[in-house]
Image (cartoon, rainbow, N blue to C red):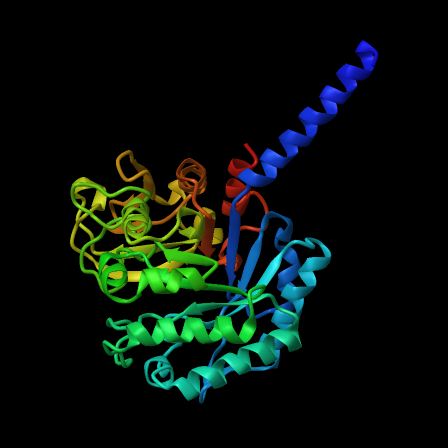
Length: 364
């Protein structure tokens, strides 16, 4: 072999090994999609996603049910994104906040769990989707006000997952949205029994300070602070301790902010009394929360999270920005986790938004 041929061969081997390493290092980027306009689907960068989850389907009796023709059209458009991104996985979902009123009672019966799994198989076959995301908020602990919850939800969730896996087979993607707070992690799920049947756990590490709170805080911080315990890192640490493999953990980012009003100026509104006012999509930040209008941007070095305060209007906003989602993506790589997901895609800007920041960090 000549020296020139030897160098060429070595270059090919290096290129192959580098490409393998890059594929291995890539993590899941999962979008929840709650838009109701089919034509809007094509506006987003599907090439930057690995999974997209239609949000939401619900129970009708003991069957998974698509609510209307418009939802069906959206699902068909989401599946159509595979023409642009052949490796994209499209999942249906069950539930959401306020969308699982009868889950506790329906899934308490083996017969109903079987009927539900059969309906999932039928819908998956009809729409040519790839899996299901369970978003039951929450088994065994209080979730949406007035919805039934009971201790048996915990083993019944395990039985539901087992039935779905049995009915759908090994190739079917099965994920669930998990609360990112201590009470859920401690009380809702039989982690060691469930995790063997599940592909990914989508941790809802947002709304950690929710609309019921009368005190402000970071609703989606990367790290806890001396004042606030709940965070991405706290949830990940608890779940690893509970026996969940790192590769199955997907952390959550928020493509929206939460606003409180009547918030005192101390500490620029952070950890102060106030009343929840509204949620704000990230795509509206530049027009509704601009510095020219008196909104002042802040960064918490401990939490690794941004926040905004308007001293005259006494408004406080907690949210994710490009910097914080890039740090979350970097955290995924550092901790060797399964990926990052976010709620939800239609709240991003069409170009150079939060998804682009995640994609840029992943490509490093």
